[in-house]
Amino acid sequence: MANVSRSAAASFFAVGDRLAGTAGRTGRITTPHGVIETPAFIPVGTRATVKSVLPEAMSALGAQALLANAYHLYLQPGADVIGAAGGLAVFMNWPGPTFTDSGGFQVLSLGAGFKKTLSMDVDAVRADDVIAEGKERLAHVDDDGVTFRSHLDGSTHRFTPEVSMQIQHQLGADVMFAFDELTTLMNTRAYQEESIGRTQAWAERCVAEHARLRAENDARPRQALFGVVQGAQYEDLRRRAAKGLVALDFDGFGIGGAIEKAELGAIVRWVTDELPEEKPRHLLGIGEPDDLFTAIENGADTFDCVSPARVARSSRVYTASGRFNLNVSASRRDFGPIDTECDCYTCTHYTRAYLHHLFKTKEMLSATLTTIHNERFIVRLVDRIRASIADDTYWDLKADVLARHYR
View 1 (cartoon, helix red, strand yellow):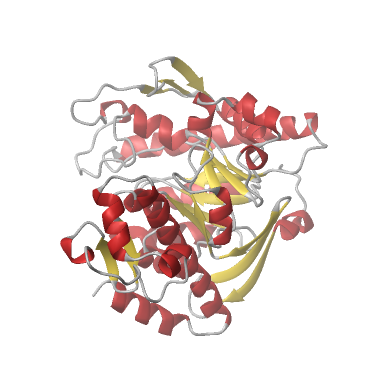
View 2 (cartoon, helix red, strand yellow):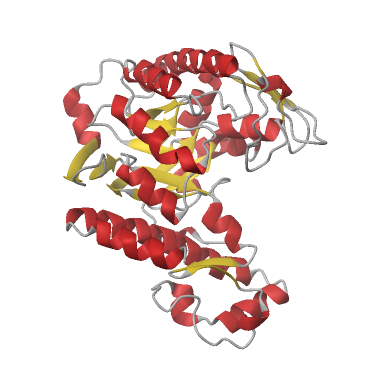
């Protein structure tokens, strides 16, 4: 990948309109399976499915691409199975572009017992000391890779940069991420420094293995490789990590790691200041409305997050006037939609009262209908942000959306 030409990079991503006075911009990512207009929210289908929702419904609600997880698909059904099916998009009957993350987040967060999130405690400790209360460590990091036990059956596995690339090549996503070491805000400054050095070395190995695999399978559709910038909340480490990855000439870049909400904008800007303008930037794990505005203003182009689908399954839904719990008694006789301003299938066909009933009776359809709504809400919001950058109404849109959503 180190010899990718500037014209090849330009054909993958093109910058469009600029948001004056900020690092925000629109753009276009061109993949073998379609174009992604940016900024764009990429819904998460961890195990080759957005939980409870048909791929056809995700397409209908406006999702431009989906992201799946290499760790989970490696464990079940196996990357070889998905490769034999023709790749991730074919396997899940998805018509558009796909992303896969490297598995690093899941290996280390599940390995420390934190499941979906990382501890935000301020106590500073080393990586092997970070563990959720009452849990046993399932993952151990060394300079070569990570040895971990499956959260499914306890079997032992080994991920290295080369293994992650091999898995993601079999999965066949249009965009994949280099294997990185995830740290938490609990880790010491010394360990963060050690970790970004390890992630840089792993990135170099990912680039080499990606090039080898492409040469062996040059007839397959081209897969883009993004490097992942770590460094926690230290400006010098974030900038150092970004500069190191830029030298490897990735197709694009991910911004990862545990980040306190108040520091999100500053951290994204530190990183994007160091990244080339002509390449896309993906912010991993961000999906709340205020965070999306902050990230876009500071130069992020695409985002993924499980939150819209996860909170939907517990009856919480997004509306223009804030997040709402359908399980409350007020919904029992509310025959209006979740959100009168939403154009999703759920809001145009079903009432709050019906959804309240589905949750109270524990019907599976409850998750389907609320997930469709939440995913549409966030996808549509980012679509509106993209349009507002193009027609110079961004600041009016931001003021209106945030004042109403967080009042």
